[in-house]
Picture (cartoon, helix red, strand yellow):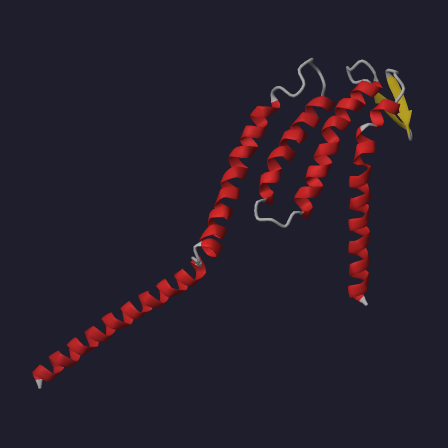
Length: 179
């Protein structure tokens, strides 16, 4: 019974994601249908032009950053490939750009965010490269690090046993000389 519920829940979530992805072009051009005023009220929430010419232009910049950001987040969450952490780089870029558009206080948009993205890139790229090296070693070169560690441990134990046996033989040899 719980398996059916889990399958239904998964189908509903995947269906909603599919509908959202299909609607994103409409969402992206939604700004064209807003009135050219300095302020608009929607569901009790006041939206202002936020320093832009009008509310339509403000939403143009918001949606220009928000739609790709949401699509990238969906891709990151649903991706099953080993390199999915690399998607964090454009997610970070769009996040910083979206924040700069929301906190609009100058005429410069999309100019200084590269500095923040470089910092994120410096963290993400080594992680992705480390994962890649591990996978290439294991699947391409056939190197299994866990098996190698186990084998090394066995060799160390054999060496310790060999040394112990040599000590016992020396003791036995010295005892046989004494008698």
